[in-house]
Length: 593
Image 1 (cartoon, rainbow, N blue to C red):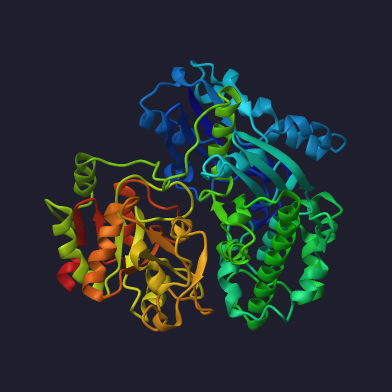
Image 2 (image 1 turned 90 degrees about the vertical axis):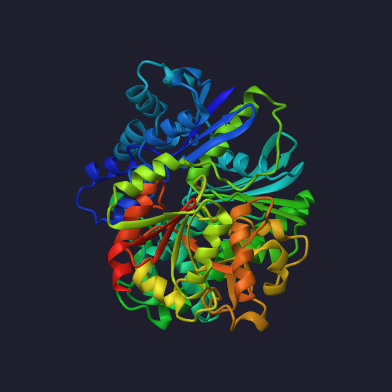
């Protein structure tokens, strides 16, 4: 059985621009259906997965994922005729009545959300293969739940899905047992922890649906106590484990509903004028971010404590965009409510393509096997010939090919130890927003100037944002405050951990202001080339840890192809690019140095 899962809503932004042409650029981010992706699931497992942005170069695009689908078919060596089902991670038809009675939302349903729109997209690209008749919509939160539970390795688990919203729900609590998922409670939008965090992100001068992770990174610089009570006045925690956020209902006309201007005005009345994009970040902004993060964490713990008591479950699965908040995930882990914790690494809407495919697979094969998720290296990889051709298209580059990986590392590691920044392109591209060592920028974490250097000259991003450490599994407990036996939970860079005080001065480039780090633990079994690099660097430095951040420049998706890597390398301040066993430098910089 061959199932292609897809996510995204192709017409979402275009519809809003057409109907409300006078809005600001940031307002057009307030729509459903970003992060389109495609996944191929077969009877033998997950064969391919990639976000459309990696091909189109439009970050977080919701466009129909035709390039991602074509990649999946090529990776699986199948034709469109061999697809049995197309699973879409939204199912609006059961909620059609909620879109009746208002001209704008009725038209939005017809032009953006309806099953017919998705069928037309498929027909437009696959008119000779009748794929539109194979389309199966899957409820959004059910797709998220399937993406987490079916890959968790747990026989049973509590499942928590929290995001902005799916079709009409913002939070879903479910129970997974064997191959079944049963929803036990849901919260309706606009009451939404994800939307609240997003609107506060907008208030703080960032992009809703894009920059929430910036607010998470800003929060440790603030004092959460200063505004925590005011934030919690907006959130009503109910005795049944749910919540309400009346603040998000204070938008009365169409424009207010589509921009949250009513909510933003209340925030301005409470905390002062909103920060303009690009303006100075004050201590007030830091304190508000800290209080918001604390309020989110308190709300999630409230939900989980209730449903832990109700279900007595020992395991927890998390997905939905809020599950990318690694600080909140760490608070949940430290609560010790659950013995097992699995956070699906493509937790946002790109992962709903994966979950939709897995759900449809079990719909038609209830006994489909389950196994714990490996590292999600399901994207494109490139053979030597393709790499050579890409290098030839970039005459500004000087390349050296090494016959062995060990010889490559022997040449590379002295450069890292000397403070040079390395772009690292290996194997298959990761699925999800985290670079886990195949499309990464790497540097020496011992250098106290390295974080500012990469933020300012390479990534060209805000100075407050932290970088993650990658560490070998064998050394993780030595440097970071984690429990022995929990190492695998840190494989996906979705949990923070404290850097042990002894090593904070030795790891300044990856230790955040509060002593935490967004940790990635690397094992030889899961990721042998990256593990070997870390070990060889450790042999030279005494610390088998590297700064690891995604290989992309500001405003761009993570690189996908060798050409993408070379283009980004040439316009950045990255010192060295490694593609497989090729070590690449810039001719002009080399001669200048």
